[in-house]
Length: 302
Ligand code: PAF
Image 1 (cartoon, rainbow, N blue to C red):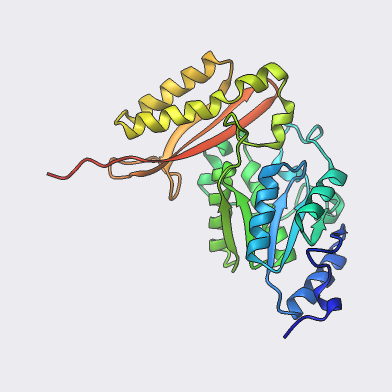
Image 2: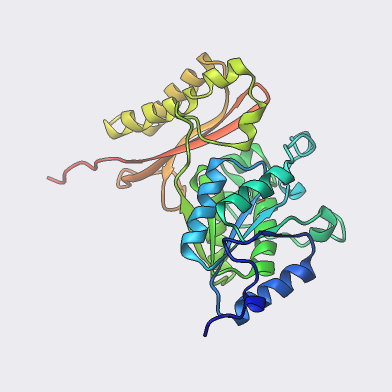
């Protein structure tokens, strides 16, 4: 049955609606659901770039209606991190979302998401992996991410949700959370969108000075070198050490460079061939993360 215009709400060729409150969001979504429309969610913290727009385009291709969210989630920032200085560009974000055909922008205030305050809010945490890699450098970060994503999943109840693979560990944790909590949502991961020189697009690239920006592609080049070395038979441990040294020489302060199994980010055993190398490194004010998947040929059994 075709939805009535009132039920269906804004279409791709009409103006995008921006909502800040939960009752208005629920009411719009109820209309879409009653009309049998397939709904996609693209959660973001705003300051949108081409990588985010690719997420929205993928969502538009897989659903009748797309809800993008812009919320700088305080729970995922640690003490001394960049919560206060994180770029907030809502008007420009809305312009870009409207231009790409997104139907609804949900941009709640902190008090809407956490009416009782940050402390004491129920938290959602995936055990184990949340404390490794980026979780080791940023304690509590992933608990903040899975908490806010669980809330957004509950609020929007989308059929699918789209995330970038640049945040590889985040994507795995969200998949795991959805599985563990029986959230019937298709989680789509999209390949990282890169600048022409290989730097992964990120809102935090804005923190780089011109000189740092010129050096920043070394991170992706280093991951490419690790992937080639491991594929050629170098041990992951040796390749990680070489990469950390190469990053230091280029002026980065690495948090980690780690070769892991793609499926669960566990340390790889000799029989694992589907791998990913992940890195996080500070360059000036910016903490950059990136990753690259690689397939290691396994020795032929004699
Ligand atoms: O990847 C991000 O931008 C954030 O971690 C997310 C998923 C929007 C949750 O705040």
